[in-house]
Amino acid sequence: MNLLDFFPEKSNNNRACANSCPVRAIQPEGNKDSLTLVHERCIGCGVCLSGCNQGMVTVHDSTGEALLLISSGETVAALVDPSISAEFPDIRDYRKFVEMIRAIGFRYVIESAFGVDLISHKYKTLFQESKGKYYISANCPVMVSYVLKYHPELSDNLVPLVPPSIATTMVCRQIYGNNLKIIYITPCIAAKSEVLEFTGIAKIDGVLTFKELRAVFEKKEILESTFEYSDFDAPYGKLGSLYPIANGFLQAAGISEDLNTGNVITVCGPGKAIQAINEFETDIEKVKKHLNIYFDDGCMMGPGMTGAGNPIRRYSDVVNYARKRINTINLTEWVENMETYSSLDFSRRFEKEDQRLPEPSEENLSLTLEKLGKIKSIKTTDCTKCGFQNCRDLARAVSQGIARLDHCYEYALNNQAEYMKTLRITSENLARSNDSLKENEKQLRFENENISMRSDLFTGTIQKVPVGIVIADELMKVIYSNEKFIEMAGEDALMIADVIPGLIGADLKSLVPPSFYRLFSSALNSEEESVSRDLAIDDKLYNVNVFRFEKKQIVGGIIKDMSAPEVLAEQVTERLTEVIDQNLNMVQQIGFLLGEGASKTEAMLNRIISSYQSRKSG
Image (cartoon, rainbow, N blue to C red; front, side):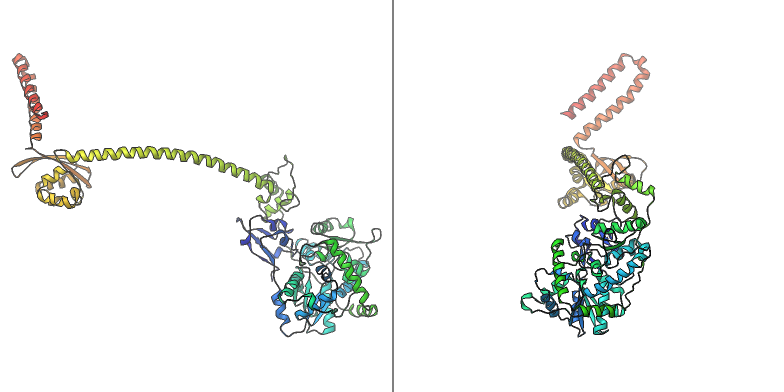
């Protein structure tokens, strides 16, 4: 069972839960921006719950399982941690919340204070007989998990005794029978996973946090005002009710904390507890003390409690509650029970769960620090905003793949500044490019209008010239033809043009005589770029000049009606020019013979040409 449920889709990318995790169980998912929870690395401290306000991390809800067991017909007992006194300060008499718990359906309601008395006295004996070996208390499941996963070499220094809740469970089964089912009500969420390792008479069948207990009260509408008094069931504890306070466990057994003669140090609080384990490993020969250690400021401040709470007020509530409990117990019976049940086997073995990652090389660390901008020439800030103790610890985590460079606040700001600068430059470049594009668009629009105007002018001019023009593709289908060609092609072509403007798509073979068509067809495959022929059709003489645009693809033709007045005048001029050119050659040969006569002949011919040109222009 996973202790925590994780919902990365609820992230707002502020990484608060990841930064708060003391063992980096919440880490980047590969190269993605999303996070993932590595359950094997989690120690169940619950810091991420208060560090995240988006609901990404929640404690696995056990209320359904507990209520199912209660309704199963089995005999079920509620084993209540003494921290209940700090959870319900609004209930003045503890006997009220005992009866409220019974109302849920529990057959027995038992406080785990007697187990605290038993185990604390075992600790006293162990510490006294340690013979130079120093121990770490194993009552806080968070710190036990931390040692086994991140300081496995210290597993032999953990006190090899079960926690008080398990000791009380074992005694309860001696009293009420081995078939008794037990649900532990606790301020510690890590207890949900810890109890799974115990079996037999030490087995706890379910765990509810105090938050979940309140939820059950609300669901079943259980209110203090509707219930009478009811006391806990046996076994009864003595000073074990002080257990919620960090050093209350030591007082329960009379273990000395005297600064001069004592050999136990009590350490509590997230930062202090982890630091104490680190120092215990490196400096135990100098410290030479046992550690009574809790991750939180005592169980009364556990993550399974409701609200943040006030430690001073809770301390006072626990002390006042313990005084009341001590005044109600039968001391003779308590002594007898201590003697009777101390013979139970409360020993415990620990299995290492090493979750340490390979240490990066100094070269790798230096490169990472350089990327972070924390090179030797620049003083590192060690601001701890990233959640690490210093910049070197962050670089180490980055090298191990459990953190990213942008976890560094300064690095993220610098990158953001560079990114904004890049965005600004890019935006300016885009603005200039946009202006340039607008100018180009304007120029292209102007040129397009000019081209369109020229095209219209050209097309209009071609349509009105006194010669026929036609263009066809490789299949001899008309691509373009002007008005003069359609007129030359005859009445059928004029009728087709009424339906299909310009005869576009019409078969050229059906529009012109065979001699015309053959000339076009041969020109399409000819190596010559143009072919000119005079063709006689129906007593008319036509000059046909055929040229190809692309070999075997497009061919065009210009057709002149030689009988047309404008064409006739032009042809006479051309023919006379040819005669003049021929006679000039002869004149040059006989010039010396004819002399002045030749000049007169040239002048006369030129006048004839001028006459015809005048007629043409007129």
